Length: 498
Image 1 (cartoon, rainbow, N blue to C red):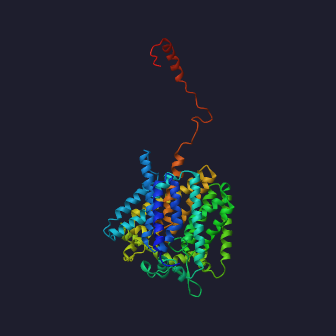
Image 2 (image 1 turned 90 degrees about the vertical axis):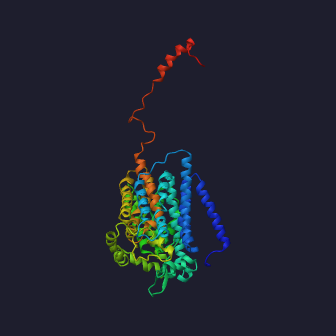
Image 3 (image 1 turned 60 degrees about the vertical axis):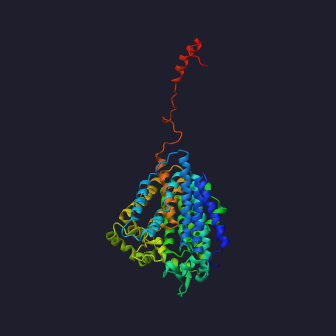
């Protein structure tokens, strides 16, 4: 591929994007707009960012989110419908308030970087309210799960194609790929390549994401949903699910990221446990067995020379702890020091992608390689506590309330949505997952969906339930005497206005 894109294709992309924004703003079916947004995030956001090589392109997803939220809000206000707050809105709004207060931290990096930091923390928060208000039917949840599977499968196919390339060939895909492979620009000295047994550089596939292991990260969100679609009798489509399953398997076995690979297995394990607790043990075990056989088969077909095999050896049970200690142990040990030295944080925008807008990222020398370091440095202990409370609350709801859902199919779908939250929490020891794609938007959207299905729905009275158990509703007879009392007056002509 040639570097950059021409003027003609750029104009076509710009016009198509403007039309998409207008459609998202005006379309009344917000669930469909959310589906389009999910496809954009899973299929286009990361690729376009690296293909064009501009950080500003990531603002496109924010424009889509604002268009959907603003359109839904205006239509609700115009129709004079009430807007009740979701049950977990208090934690969400409290976290947003802490982030905004940190914008004015005296130790902050300045207003420009601070605003970029606010964006990184809060850009996906509207999805919490949209998920709560507009994903309220089983069909909508099923479509959400299916979209995750499609995006992960497509990313797996692209990751396989990238694994066949040399780093020089992949660098030709666009400026963003080149900067990440060679460690140029804001990523100076941090080239995203691996090395084979001979010490030669090899590709660590991006898939359709903007970072190494993007395909496997997407697979971590989609694998539980794939298992549900495979074991659920009402949604089983072998001709469709077969290729999708192979694509997800490719995403896992070609991953160039140990953290993303571990996240996949954590999601599958969490789903199996929740499905078993939710009275679906046999189906869960059968689905996990099929997935394991499929992963092994695809792994074998890659051949002995594929670099993914060598890297995968470091995520075996006997090596994963040692590997994690070597790569992230020093970062984890810094958490206590940061919590004591910076209880109020150092201001949003100090670390992460927001810091790169000045061209001199992380000039402070602080370590934000884990989610917990990142949160305590940018939002202080208050922001860290609120985010932990939200995540723990979601996990507790998933463990204790999904098994109470009456519909067996809905239990499985909710378990598939909740399972990746466990891997998101554990993956926080390897990176700031709440501000990255795909984990960031997934967290806020699924938090809203689970708030509705696991808190609001159980509080609602059953539809069409009789007031007395097993007895018909008593007849109402107050109108009969009044009717007989008016008849004599009507016959005498007194007060007859008809």
